[in-house]
Image (cartoon, rainbow over all chains, first blue to last red; front, side, top):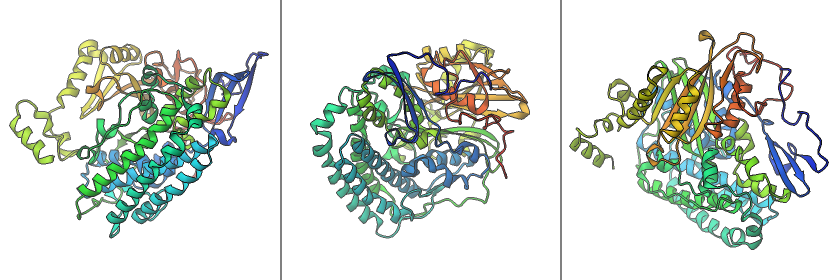
Length: 378
Length: 199
């Protein structure tokens, strides 16, 4: 371990013009991570992200627990988006165990995951707003988010970390009268988020701070392997709900939001447009969902795979494509479980975008990446 | 939707025989039937055609292909996958430790944004490095050539595999730690011989 270089601890030549600045890990503007920036006057010349302050070893923990016991802890990385972060795991385990999910459960899952997507984006939007100094944009999403959290509480019994998806379906059926309440809340929610345009997205101050900052070209977005809103803001039309539909997504009419500017403004607007699309999807799913029927296939205790098998499943989460690589070896525990998270994949774009940018623009660029430090660290 | 699909597949059985097993009962019958998905098979055949016995097709499933390659050839195969098959980014790089084989496997999951016909596909490129009983990360035989010059997107993923498994990537410009604490002086934690206390 002697020759190993460590982030921020390596010896560096001192340059009298360049100053090194540690943003984080205790700075609220960086989340739970450190960004080592080198600045020349007001301009950033280099940036070195240093994640890992909230690393929990989810992948190691998963090797010691069986497929069912893994459910509650695997949703911890993003508690606001816990249905989506669990979704590919559940799909992967279903492939390993060879289970077919009941039709009604597929729709319940879609409704839950779309609600969760909105809950996550609202939380992110609140943070994005406050870091641009727009305190109304902190209060409004934080308040309107409660509408959907109440729905999730009705559906699953928990406000966050629902642990609702299980291999073979969902844990519980919908409560009585849920469809009507859901439709009413979602319609109101959509009307409400459309009002954000006037106060936030059409606001000249926001536009002046985010337009043309941190521009990521289409080629670079593809080369860097970014995903989700970062990719779609750079003009690549890629959404797994359409490209590789899972569960019942192929029976719904979904359209993707793509912008071509590739700047912070586009990256911050795409998630908001996604929420409006999510409301459409929820309404369609409520209409198409079978009105009755089972929502769960009963599993044997301690289910295990048939032999050595490797599966890779992915879904479109609130931040982008989220994949699980599960290696099973006919034991009740996975042999190896790797979570490929969108935040980790988008982090590679940060040094690119910040280079040559003013230090004052760092929060607007950093948060526009839709980055969730806890998820990136796992 | 479902009914119309099955109708068309009944009509064109000669054209698309592969649509049938993958349609409704997902996992079980697809595994039993010998018929491989045609499009995925054509991709794997292109690779075999180019590299013959240097590559081994581990499996061909619906939308998923896995290829095993020696570490000597992994760079060439990756270049062919990028230039010849239009894959353009790596989604995930996972290490898998096999103490019984004395090997550590590294799997690259490669996808494509630019080619619409490949947007459902994930190609898993797997290679194996020698595993040391007493690892000295970076200074022992556990080494692989980096794919960072082929797929730029592996940069952080390979850094993570290095610290979690001790697999050093030759030619990687930045082999520093990423997630682990600075004072970590134990085994690479995702190796099987690193045990969680009390378990």
